[in-house]
Image (cartoon, rainbow, N blue to C red; front, side, top):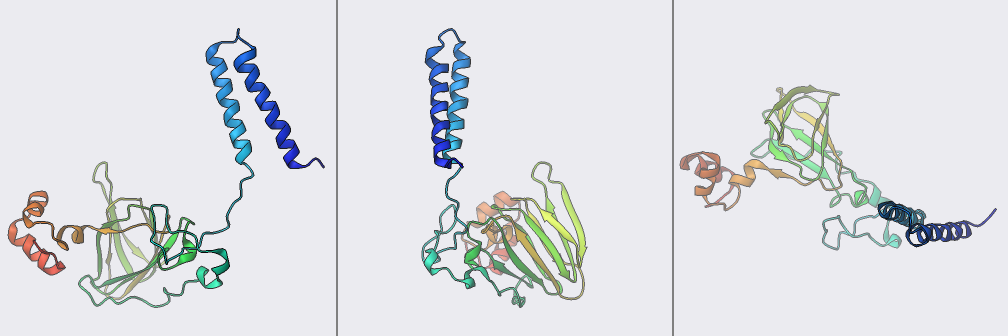
Length: 245
């Protein structure tokens, strides 16, 4: 069998010869055709040279370093263990004794290093009776929700027409929430509800609309102007959610 590097070398020489012939040795050929031929052959050569690039099996997050736009840096392979690929934090429900009577337990790259770079993650959602996850978005990924206990009313709002899509979900039901769209989940019955949400990113991001408006120091006057709420309502919501201003 001829060695792969030798075959690649022959192909490279052939491609170079074709490029030279198309661009220089055939002056009567249409100029546009010369350029297209050269571009096509150059791209083919580039693909050939990279087709056997090394592929890394995984990139376990190095949590000792800060994450960047593309995620965490890779931990040294010598320090990777089986524990990096196992997460047991979803066995128990989160604490729902809070203002929303709900708890979200994430298994993102920051909690589950083995997910880093793989483009997926998961979270557990626990909703006590009356519990709600308010309108929020995940700017980095779409979400797929699976109900495993109880009843959940879930929905999202489209961005192009503000169309609302709402459904009452029971055990075994799935609902998808497209990336970046406002959505919510509410306990739809009189007992605890549990669901698991999977995401198309190791870190889908999260922004809760109510918290973005009322849980910080954004001046009340600006909130009133942008939400059409009166001063008393804004001050009340800021007080409830811990905001100032």
